[in-house]
Image 1 (cartoon, each protein chain N blue to C red):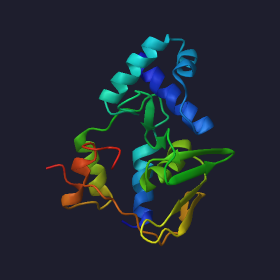
Image 2 (image 1 turned 135 degrees about the horizontal axis):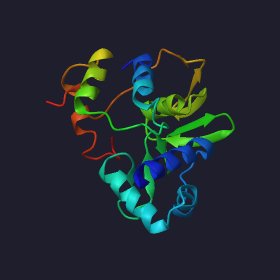
Image 3 (image 1 turned 180 degrees about the vertical axis):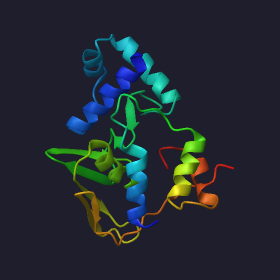
Length: 145
Length: 47
């Protein structure tokens, strides 16, 4: 029960602010103690519902959101955040149900790229997304994936 | 992968992520989704 509440509060915070909440913010939102929040986050990490930083145990990813800067900056409404990859950048549009603007770059040429989702359509629609890791291996090194 | 397919995958994968009822899909559900989107072959196989 705590896990579902913490997960939902975490995601809602990302959707509203673009950033990860602190443990104290999660504890307040869920009316739990910080140790209970930490324990719930560990279980969510074990269940691959979120990814915690291996060293600090802070939230690293709540897919599609990233708690740390990446090459995929996403704006929706007045909010800006980071996605973990190109798929996740579009995933933010799906998760928040909003138009988004994605700022990134071509991984080969480093040319800046802007991709928009407007009224359910991706613009431009001529781009190709490269998946570097086969699906069966996505969780072997999720940071690389 | 064409970005239109990535967008379809993103919608199927993430549209319910802010729902209280969200749960991780089973491997069979993931395979069925990949198949529905035409994502087949070794890169999309868990075998």
